[in-house]
Amino acid sequence: MRKGKIIVYYGGGKGKTCVAVGRGLRAIGDGLRVVMIQFMDYYNSREMSLLKKLEPDFRIFRFEKDRSGEEVCSAEVDSTVRKEISGEIRNAYNFAKKIVDTGECEMLMLDGVLECVEKEYIEEAELEELLERRPEYMDILMTGAVLPEELAGMAECVYQIVAEK
Image (cartoon, rainbow, N blue to C red; front, side):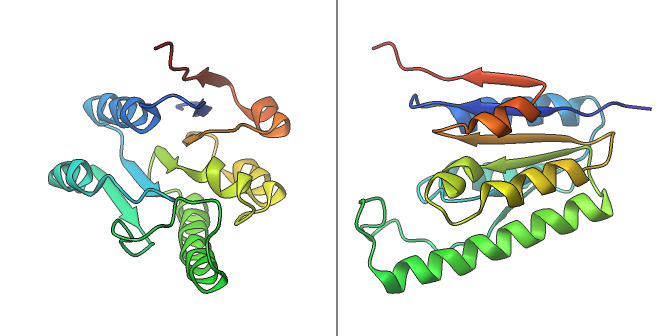
C-alpha cells in the first residue's frame, strides 16, 4: 500500500503554488488522483483555469469570491470583508475535512492554508487535527509564507522558497 506524506512549501519567495502544481502533475502522471483547494489566492485565475482541463484527475476548488479588483491584500481589511473571507475559508476547510474523511484522492493540496493560520482564519490546532486524520496513503501538501513549528514537525518534507534576487 502507498504511504502518503505531509509536504510543505513555504517562504517569502514566489513560486510555492507553481511547485505544488508541478508535484500534482507528477502525481497524476503516476496515476494518482489530486484535489487542490485554494485558500487566500486572489490572483491566479488564468493559470488555474488551464488546470481545469485536467479534470477529473486533477480537480481544483476555490471558495472565495474574486476580489482581484479590491484592496484585500492590505493589512487593514475591514470587518465586513474579513467576515466574508472567514466564511469562505471555513467552507474550504470543511471541504478539506470531507476529502480527508472520504479519502477520495491520493494527494490533497491545501494551497495557501498556512496563510490562513498566520492570519488567524484557521486555528493551528484545527489544521494539526486534519493532518492527523488523513488516510495513510494520502499526501497532504500545504503552502504559505510562514510555517509554524508544530506543523513543521508533523511534515516529512519541508521546502523553504526564498527569493535571492
